[in-house]
Length: 179
Image (cartoon, rainbow, N blue to C red; front, side, top):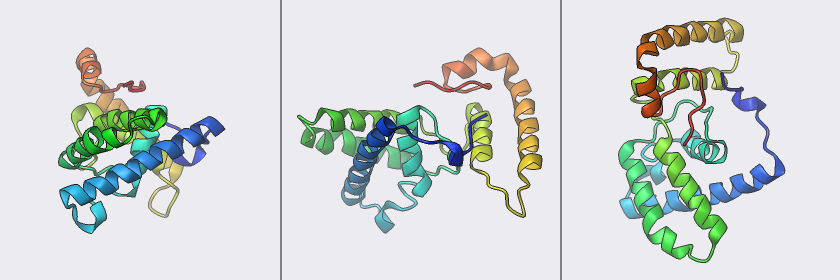
């Protein structure tokens, strides 16, 4: 199970790298909105607040704890087109930012979409829901986390005969995904 999103601290080196990744995400998103004419400054089309943070987290630590993620495939494709074209050329000679851009693109390719959850992403999605959930009148932390664990166990049983196939497509059964 993932740690709570609120319990994760960055080392000094990770914080510096996170800022470089954030710079690349912000510039690429703004160029994508301009070039592809996304309405509302890209909000919704390029995802929402959690999506931009999740792609940085995925690039930095090869996982994300955030839910929901709503960036669609067409928006990812537009973002990647901008990143691999104009932006890559403009960053020539800036190796750290070029590397950050490449890391963001790879992370984005592997970032899930919670509007349409693929079967091989069900267990990791449940982990992200649990990691993001805060106690509220509707979510009693211990009770709801236990309920999510039961659902995960049920899905793990469903997928048990297909473990090798799931690993081939990046799915997880109680293990971290790797890029």
